[in-house]
Length: 403
Image (cartoon, rainbow, N blue to C red; front, top):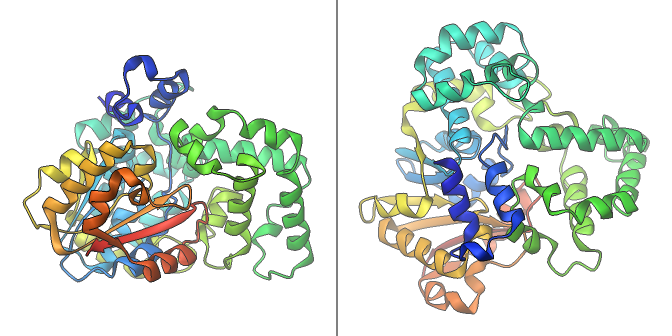
């Protein structure tokens, strides 16, 4: 079922004859575990959304980090919707952990450090009994190494998944090009080793190797980027996709303090620097652990299409919708139907947040003029969210409200 949902999303209402080999390959690719961590900054999201206490939020789940982190805003309900049942299995495992673990140290060991051999027994004895059948089947199931997937949490969870494997390959390339990845995380921006490493990163993206790799559509599949979004990402950059990727990576590494940018740590080390309250997504911070445990029942995983789920909700019942970058996948007609569904279920003060690989909002397209008559982009808060987003990998963040 997951493959059908993803293929429908990639198809964009084209006939089967118009679906390329790369489209079909991505649909198969994306039903796997892609993200071990979501790559949209929940702190930037919440600053832009300004969620009132008791809000009802509908978000695309991905790895579940943001859906859980939104609990710090004290919502009434968070619906976490996803086409990919594998990502929902990860969210369900985190929810099971919040129910099973009474101490932050135990929760951190399994989901933060995620590399302790003792986590195998914890999964079998404490978490597995709390999972529903689809999630249990996924984590009990065996990967290409013929080992059960729950062992990921015993040998470094963030090294796994399609993105984790891609980052590992990028590390292999960087190491052979003499790039000191540890120096890139030095807290002093003027540190000579850090400056030298940044210059080498810049030079790498001008190399023939990177330009050849970036010309291959399959390169970005492990980043969760389908063929349609790849075109938007490249945009009109004179140097093509390689230059865009260079700009985004340098923004991630150079424009934010590494003291609290956990995205940079994941990009350079595939881990977090440690437990506590800094350099971690909110749901993994010690200061929020008791609230996460208390309110975990407010997060409801939903396997399905976002548009169809929004249509199923009562009128005027939703206060915020977070679409991540899903509209980059969609044709104009699908975007129009999505916003009609948002209009029907959204409260008078609803806020809609999303990101784009390029800089332009899809609602600026002439074909979506009717939608744009109902919704207005908040220029100031959109710009603020973009400046705050520590992942640095998107071209823009967009916040919309009713006119």
